[in-house]
Length: 242
Image: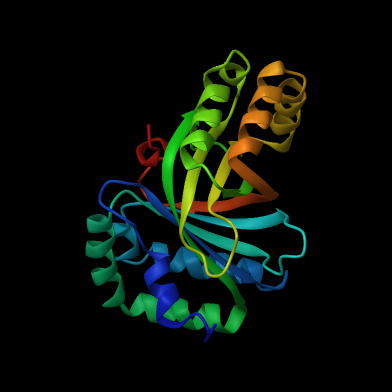
């Protein structure tokens, strides 16, 4: 993982501002044989004396459908504020457990990408039991209209039936990419997702949303991931943006 360097260290425990939840997507490729070892390495880090002081929420996810993306897994660290991050990172960088984790990742995986995102608004029933995540990427030309379109959908009669959670984020730093915003949708299971999509797609509210969204943004595609394990004391509800 030499190419990640100090940038990944900063991104792994990063928050964009004191006023907004921020989260990273640190993607890497690991063989099926090494994937359990990566989880074990993360477990060791998060159960170290400093790791136990982590104030946010960390997800380790396996990619289940993401097209040509060579990544197989991602770490998704979430923080409430920059001040929270700063205090923890200072402790983490002084702990030998971080160097042990770093060496394990170098031996077990290859880096793919690193993206920083800032949550703008959240909707739905926000719980920690959701394990399946569908991410939709957009190139937004009219941010205000884009947010309004999603808000209207979620406030509609169809939106009120939605069983999961939705988080709208913009990209803080993601390299040379057309993606400006991401809608992350969480479900308890793929079965729950499938049942909801049938309801959503048959509704006039969804048709109206698609029309409004297309006027404000270009849809760039979706990907799906599943949580393998999470760490940290913060709940997703704690980290949501009303």
